[in-house]
Image 1 (cartoon, one colour):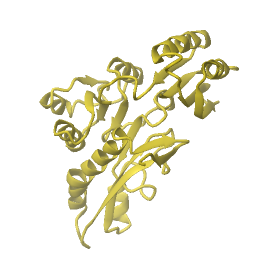
Image 2 (spheres, rainbow, N blue to C red; image 1 turned 60 degrees about the vertical axis):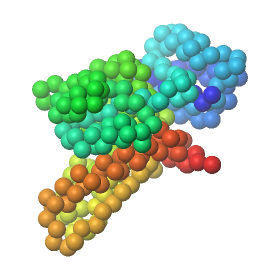
Image 3 (cartoon, rainbow, N blue to C red; image 1 turned 45 degrees about the vertical axis):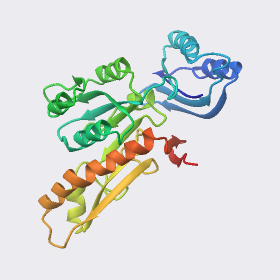
Image 4 (tube, rainbow, N blue to C red; image 1 turned 135 degrees about the vertical axis):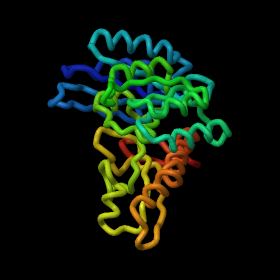
Length: 287
């Protein structure tokens, strides 16, 4: 069974060794291992993807042993296996202001086009709370009066609801590196309302318009700590406007039509296992 392990904690010596030695000693076949030592934050992080021999030891036992290593080494260790539970993948839909994308995701889940479960909606603003209530999805607020998120609370909610994939549906805050590593390995899907790599940043419609572009678009990608990195793109969609189209019309068309289509299709590709993230690159798993 394919298993992803992440370990994050204060930087120190010999943090990876006990994890690697334990899993290989049981008979795991390691496909990928990446380690990060961020001196500026004194942060150690590791992501390990492997084939785990469940006939020798269950995921529950693996998790128990790694919890013990985590306590010994002051590491936060997570063990995630998509196939551990016989259920639909559980999504956390994360929002700030705009409701078009969460509405599209929830409608596609309701209608069976997305084979997933909306386990929780999370917002650093309360603008989309009514969407959660409309679809009977639990809602949690993590933002203060200025919309600044409590990232520790964020992580606790993800664990509480046993989330498989985190969907940043126009969630307008940058995730800190620690959170990205804790759910590394293709579990965080970000949405950017511009075509990458040409138009990164927070105002891609305005930037493209200032360059007199007639084609606009959106990008959904697996997240890594670098903002809007390009090699992790899952899906891009674009639309063309006539010369002289006002910027307000461009934005309206993008937000109401193009953006929801882009992210819904990206989530579908992930939950249907058509794509995965390997070595920071999207690969096709379709046979």
